[in-house]
Image (spheres, rainbow, N blue to C red):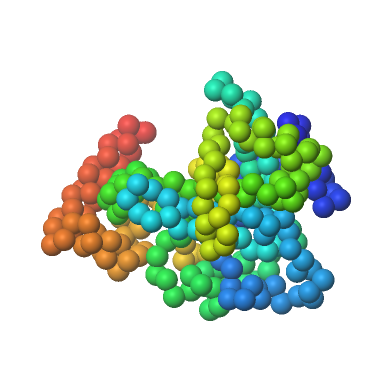
Length: 264
């Protein structure tokens, strides 16, 4: 995989970035029914490389794996970086047609648009929760969860996401990366081998809707999605859910007040 400032794909230069393009994360979760969101000529709807076997995996010790398929317009590229622990695999995600400044209406309006599968779900999206403060995660979920990019070990796909390298070179590099593990799975298709790469947590996320702003605190999240969060709390804590919530809000308020005093 290239270690320079850019890689070549689809006949054009694609600049690499230090932080994740969170539009790409949304492209795993905002796909309208029948993938009809672009309303454009079929000429522009050709399959981009992520559709050949890239998935987003939500998993933890206490819940069943949830697998998201990508929008067929999503481009996915790998780059290798050196760390004190060894090689690491970094990911570049981009819409294959649009950029941050030019986005189709239905993507830009996710999850507000009526044909988005999240439209009727009064809850924060997975990536927003992945970036949320620990107080929120441990109160609502009572456990940490992980997000991975699952990369199918497929010759055609590997050649597309790391152009210029042979399939064996890519496999060897992925096997050497300290943040990559390999699993066997059957996610809605025939069993296959997948390389799992951690989804990085970014402080510069691009939020596409006022419905799903960044989760800053338990209080703010509860005010936005109180019905959804109450359901989770009751599931975990039973009749004591209200007292658990009150205690979390009190602890959070005390820490916030202390931090504000220290800044003065």
